[in-house]
Amino acid sequence: MRKLLPALMMFLLTAALVSADGFGYEYSSITGTGDDVFIFIEWTPTMIDPLCAPRPCCYNEVPADCCHYVIFYANASGVYYVGYTYDPVAFSHENGTYLLSGGSIYRAYRGCFQKLGDVSEKAKLAFPYIAAQFPGRLEVYHLNCTMDRIGSVKLSPECTFQLSSRNLIVGCPNGTEQFNLTPSGIFRVSSVDRWELMESRHPSMAEGKLENGTLLFSNGSRTYRIPSEKFLPYLYDERELKLLTGVFMEDYLLILPPVMGYAYCVDNGTFGSSLGFSSIISRSGFVIYDIKPEEFKPVYAFIYNGTLKPAPLFLPEGSYFRPLAENVTIREKCSCGADTETLSEEVNLTTASSEGKERGICGPGLLILMGLFALLIGKR
Image (tube, rainbow, N blue to C red; front, side):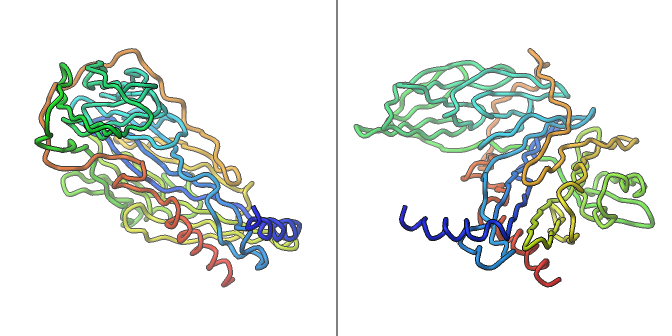
């Protein structure tokens, strides 16, 4: 507590003169196949660091709410809001795209979004299995077009567990238990032969290219050409055109907005701000200055299948956001896809957790991005 007092006093002394706020968002995962895709956007509001308060507008931001994710679901009809949550996981395979979020399991298939069931929030997904921790036990489920409980293991608070696409290992102070997993049950074994994760499916993506008033998206096998003027009413600046990203789904093109980061500061009545944009793919970008929070515009994605359909995602409000996309419709049942137990040798589970491969810009990455915007403000 003693170490915090100097920083707290400094903050109180300077709060009347200097205020700062902002946000940053980054794509953490874009997972799906066919007609369905889940989009994880890591959202981080930021605030001034009291330790640098003697230097007004120093923009040494610290994350105020890291690391949470805005989840959207898209199909050929549009983009829909799923929720704002911590540590979601998505996996896509032949028979659907699955989402583990907030203790609930969802499945999307051919434009249909259903809830398969609930588990505890202390759950891990390694498709096609889920292991969920409850008081005194670990419940194991198999995922396909339904979610079926296949077994239970005793689990005390001192125990930990690991899960793969065919095995479960439970480690406790008094020893370790190992299990093989099958759709019909779990079986205790003396050793695990293979530890693997199934390969998640991801759509191909391409950055837009501006050619003679046309925005072109191509992944080598498909090319879309869209008049650039159709996007302009939904953008801050025409330079955003080159930062839009096309996601190639089965029967349509999903077009995502750039990464954005915002920082503003008021020092003795003088206002300064920077709103930065960068590409998901190339990381090229630009900065607009002196935009007040009340001047924010809605952030849009687009669906293109011969006609461009704008899809509002959210509206930044200071350091937070207000969802604008229509809430996803949850159905009781969706049709069933290909029933397959084919395993891949690739280890590529898509997760937005701290161990995931597709991390967002939480922590140091965000500080670097926001620091860049701040530096540009300081040069003005």
